[in-house]
Length: 444
Ligand code: TRP
Image (cartoon, rainbow, N blue to C red; front, side):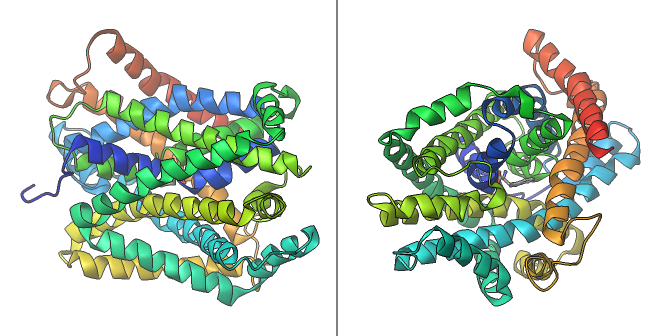
């Protein structure tokens, strides 16, 4: 395709892809699902999922994008035509676009909580509150639709502005500042946590696995999270891969993304749990871990306000650099499809996602009784996307990359020897079997 945008360098691609991978998944979700499922044992299963399923599928997804030089829908369409495969594969492109709408709508609401807490810590407005009052604050935020709406709207506007500016002046520029900052803040927070006596307890919690809490549900959650945290299964990594030059080798880059993402998840745990333990709080409190337990702990510690600001700012930049990658494939597809300008499409798509997000945020208050299969709208969207749609998309990507593209000499991945064999076996057999078994067991 002529005039297609490209990253300025491979390094920038790496930054943007790490920015996509590192997000609320690493800093908000990972610590609390580890806490809910018993610590070390869950981490072990999660690391297995990343290595055996996540990395092979990541390579597959970037590979498809780079080969097609096109958005997910066009990628499946064009490549299927090129290698004379069934047109049916394009379903996975459309599935990705749909998943993008759904994920961003609830992602933005949670990202909004980081804005709320950033503002709370900047004003130090929780100072002097006891545990009950801190809990009540979060509950009152959830109960207030206007508050949630305000932050959700601000977050969506920021995301829309960055994506609207395009690859080079939008996403590239933002990650160039945000990612180095993110690492610096994270390291400072970990150093702070190592100063607490409870740091040793945290290491125990991570390293002494308690297998009694592991069940099929936990394994399903670990797998779903491996997809979510690596931004797999909906075309985000595919569209980023499509902005690479066609001759770029991608295996090392993919390992780089996965390693950095895992590192950030583990470091976030090392930064958060010591604070929780120092305050004799339970790590198993679920989604509110970061918004009730953590502020509680922070406010009792020296320099708590400063580290609170740092922490929620970190959460915010992690969330923005991910949100843009959820929006980009949807926008890239519609720009190509409709010939409207990027600005128009971004605003339209942003507005639709913003509207769905309103449904999500109402599920915490006025619509809390609206249930889909027993869960409220927020939980249903989270479960549907992470545990069903992303693994399904990942399955399509894995099968298409191996059995269809790599089988054809014109579109082979260009790896040779043993690395190629390992990738092929993992992506063509292991990942699909794991996805199908785990999804099947998890669903029934
Ligand atoms: N990986 C991000 C996180 O951990 C979220 C994310 C960004 C994502 N892009 C995605 C999830 C694409 C699924 C698909 O928070």
